[in-house]
Length: 597
Image 1 (spheres, rainbow, N blue to C red):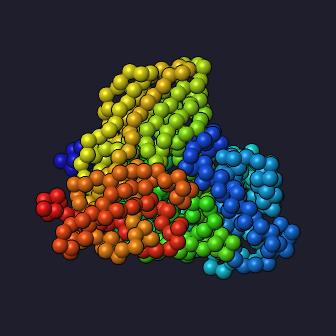
Image 2: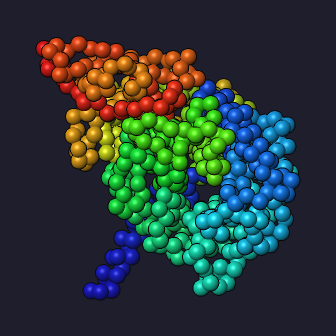
Image 3: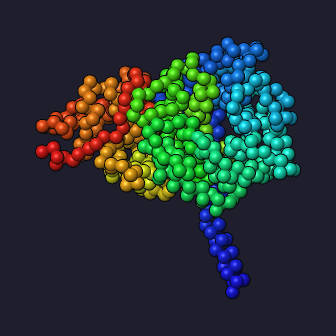
């Protein structure tokens, strides 16, 4: 009987693997289409990248020059090696988006400071006096690996990627030869992530084996605001190892964390006992966005990308002013209190660089490929992309009015016919079916405004796991049109928030909107209520904060003898405080139409 049970158990295990391998197997992992294959001509993000080139990077560069970094006289202890590697990575991305000779010269000048001997010494530091309380050695080296890869893809002149791979091979060789010598003080999840990426790049198994050993050694460690990096590394490496059980456990924990702690602006806590808070740190948001991206790459669950998008457009984008000249104080944001941003000339560079790096790398997440035959469209923008795999050689031209409106169409530019399947992500705010991605909140139901056509012929809108699947043999001038124009969505807390649920918030496209007290001279307006059955009109204000969408409606003083509506103006949460620090409000008490009588 015992042998029969073992055989049955083995059959069940194999059946589980065969079924779930279709979703979480190595062959189904998503591979990002690297940023150098994109041309971006996007109203929103192009100008964000441009503001980095014009307003941020020159200031950072001058501050480093004034301290003597480029003349060999740098003696300050305000940076660690990883800060400069992240700066090099950021500059590489920005240079590809908007190349110019000055940027190229600075890019190579920074790269020239990195000595070749770093490839031979796994304990090497290129800052003579790195700052106190710096990150672990593996954090430093992982930042070098990322920078080397980005610099090479941007067309850099120095062989940094060769040095990085040489360094990684030596490090992994030492670990695999004597794993008992692994020191916890040296470990960091970012190294695990990068070794996984190097494995995908080279298929060198030593990278994956060493990453797995590191992950085992880190189990149970507490990483504070960087906890999301650990879960990101766990999802990615276990997915590469085809350890489906561990991937599912990671995925289940992610869903649980989101449903317990998610803020309406997209951030959540990766801590076991973490709670959602009105005041949050951007470093934790950045780490958890990495978890969303890596888990998405393993599971292809659109909800992971939905949450990444929500945090990107609301929390992360809130950390830096529209023109790039101000950074959130201490990299913290309060949902209701006034937004304080410090001048880019005065903010410690160790705070500036991680934030601008997280925005600069966005183009790496627009597209991904799967099995060399499928293309996932994760984020919508205007521009062009070239996709090359063993089976595909595609050039696509895309047009979208995201993020303010929605809508997307794509033209095939490649001469030779290509067999390909496109997976178009359906944003959660465009449908009610994906509302589970909201975690602690829910959209009030609304008719979907979705349509799909191929070469002018309408196709049925069938959403599978958050995607529209469009397959075919594609030839030049074929066009796919996906309409998902945004309307104003109303959001209510769900039962698991544990507070008064008689409140409502507003969203349009990925943006959550808020009221700023500067837009009213009456305190009653701040404490007023909205009518649940009344809508808000959207309007694009070209003259406000560089051009933003606004929502206009009415707000009521319920304590008055008669309900008289007064004007209500809402602006995107990310733009709060850019006209001066003041209190903000996302959630409004509401009443129904019958109470107006």
